[in-house]
Image (cartoon, rainbow, N blue to C red; front, side, top):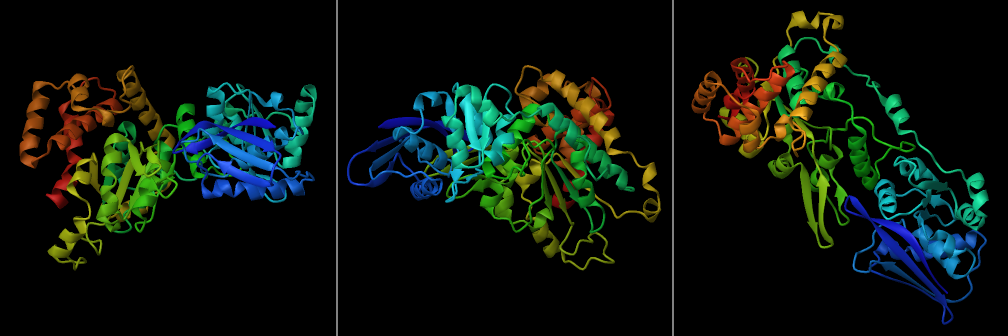
Length: 517
């Protein structure tokens, strides 16, 4: 007999509907798989046979052929185990296939018949909904993840092959009593996760200029680089940046959760990522781990930081080749990976936050402590290439903390919640400004957008012209100063960009002029 089971598979960050076609016929005993299965998919035949046996189901000696459609796409992963097993049982007449027309089935099988969790459930369930499926049977471990997309599909979590067979063999009116559909209240998830951070900007004494720069960066989604000696609070401030960013919207949460689902990094028992991602890779990270890749392409760290923060501590210690990989993602907000199996695109809209010492020992320009030669300093700074610097809107020094600031109680410092309110107001202004366009933040504006949304008065134009000539700015740096000034004006609630806004924006380009000019 022949049967067809709907399943799903991952291709990059997206999924596609897969038909598992099963034919069981008389002939010499054989178990063949076709349709471009990978090695791990081929191994499913042994897992399925043993899982069926250990679940008390005897398969008669017969010729079994499995076809995975579409046949021109290479099949990866272990999500086909359960649909293959159910397809065999349908072909043997043990399960009524007609009841599975609108049901998608995914899951990995253990040799004892246990249904184990898999990667990529979130995009697969979305594909099931898009293709009109009314129900999805998946591993118990993934049931909450699959149920976050709402009530448009019934999500059934099963823990074993036996449980799945019992459910499918029961009468329709008994099914919901046997295994109730999983329901997740997304609004409740966001309420539980709100304001759970253990860190706050109020913890930081002094460094008012650095805090202000972080506020501007957060308001306009600008990339920022901090340069200063060890112990000046660079890492401490960077780790608190997510606390002043607006909360993830539901749409953003689904985007981020999809990436983590595909990468298999969604925390156990957690249905959604509801907090801004914060990724801080070590400087020894490889290029493929940063950008993504591998034999079967997986999202890299920059994609895991999507809609959040990518913090590169000791950024000058990263290899120049690795850093230069960031050029295209910083500009396009996505990363492209080419492999023999196809071309893959992963989202990578993140805030880059870099922190570094001004020299190998960390104390330049304090010649009382710094013993580095000019050659050593120049070589150290050269790890940050011109094109990368050009893409960083804010470059600011982190001075040594004054003793008077150290002795001040944290009660006098501004809390993250207060700063976040100002950031949200500035973001709301941008949302209204760019309504109906593809632009989200001031940092995303193209030269055409700048000409449209950043009208300058005569005084401000003359000021910018003077800065352009004196600092020897590139065209990109010139436009970035205007975008920064627009963000500062938004924070101040000003419709027009004033000279004071341009002056502050220009200050954020002085540090790179000091060290890299």
